[in-house]
Length: 412
Ligand SMILES: Cc1cc2nc3c(=O)[nH]c(=O)nc-3n(C[C@H](O)[C@H](O)[C@H](O)COP(=O)(O)OP(=O)(O)OC[C@H]3O[C@@H](n4cnc5c(N)ncnc54)[C@H](O)[C@@H]3O)c2cc1C
Image (tube, rainbow, N blue to C red):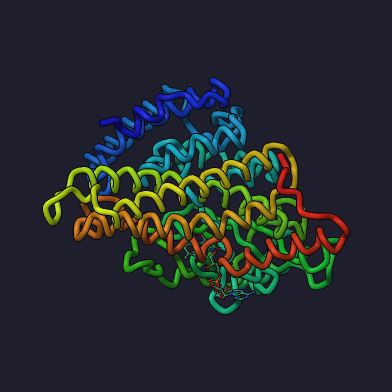
C-alpha cells in the first residue's frame, strides 16, 4: 500500500520544482526517521537525545534547517508559501518541527526579532536561540484580563532612568520554565497614539534570571505539565531600555505580525495532522473485520471517509489560498481569521471520526489520534478564540459593503 512518503514523492504539477523538491525531501525524513521513532521521541533520556542530534544533523545536511528564517540567520530563506507547503508534511508527526529547527514559541520570537530587533538584540538574544544555546517564551496573556481583548492587558512597564521597570501577572507563558528570556507584552503609554488604543503596548525582552521574574506555577493542560505553560509574576523587574523591541507603542503591531503568520502555520499543522489521521482511518477501515465484513464496506464508515475527505480538501485549499494571499502582499486578515475558525473545527471532526473507526485503539497511545484530538480543541482558544475571529471576518466584509464595494471572492 502507498505510504505517506510515496504520496509526497508525486510532484504537484502546478508547483515550482523547488517546492516539490522540498516536500519530497521533507517527507523522506518525516516518514523514514521520525514517524518510526515516535515512541522513543516521546521519552526522555540519552537514547532519545542521541536520536534527536542524529536527525537534526541529517536535516541540516539536506538543507532543510529552519524554514522560517532567512539564510543570513542559518535558515532556508524560502518565503512564506514554500514554508506553508513544507509545513503540512512536517505536521504528519508532532515531533517533526523541532527536528527541523522550528520550536514554538521560540520560532515566533525569532521571526519578530529578525524584523524588529536591533543588531545588539539580534546578537544577544536571537543568535543563541538559533545555535540552540537558548530558548525563549512569549508572555502576553494575563489571568485577570481577557486575552481575546489584548488592549485590556494591564502588565505595566514604567521608565526609570535608563531602565524599564515591569510589574504584572501573566499566565499560559508556554516554555516559561526552560526559557532563557521572555518577550513580554507591557502597557507603556497612557495616551492613544496615531493608531489609537493600539499604540499603548510595547514588547520588552526580559532575561528569565532577572530579579523579580517569579514563576508561580506550571499550568497543566489536558492534565499534562510537560509543556511548561507558566504563571509568572513580574515584580519590579528591571531591564535596560535597550531591551525594548521596536519603537515605544509598537507592541500590538508586532504581536499581529507574529500571530498572523503563526495562525497560517498552525492551520497547516492541522491540515498535515488531519491528513495523517485520515490515512490511519482509511487503512484501519480496510484492515478491520467487524460483523462479518470489512469496516470499509459499511456505509457508516464510508460516510466518515467521504466527510473527512471533504473537510480536509476544504481546510487545505483555504489555508493554501491564505498563504498565497500573504505571499502576494494583499491584506490577508479576513482569510487568516476565516481559516483560524474553520480549520480546527474541520480537524476536530476528522480526528473524531478517525478515533471512532479505530474503536478503543483510537484513544490509546498506539496512534497519535489522542494528541490530535486535544490539539484541535485547544486550537479553538489559542491565538484568539473562535468568536473573535468570526466577528473580524464579518466586520471586514461589512466594511467593504458599507464602503460601496462587494466582497471579491476572486482575489488571486
Ligand atoms: C495551550 C495554550 C498555550 C498558550 N500559550 C500562550 C503563550 O505562550 N503566550 C501567551 O501569551 N498566551 C498563550 N496562551 C493564551 C491564549 O492565547 C489565550 O488563552 C487566548 O488568547 C484567549 O484568551 P483568554 O484565555 O484570556 O480568554 P478570554 O479572553 O477570557 O475569552 C474567554 C471566552 O470568551 C469568549 N469570547 C471572547 N470574546 C468574545 C466576544 N467578543 N463575543 C463572544 N464571546 C467572546 C470566547 O468563547 C472565549 O473562549 C495559550 C493558551 C493555551 C490554551
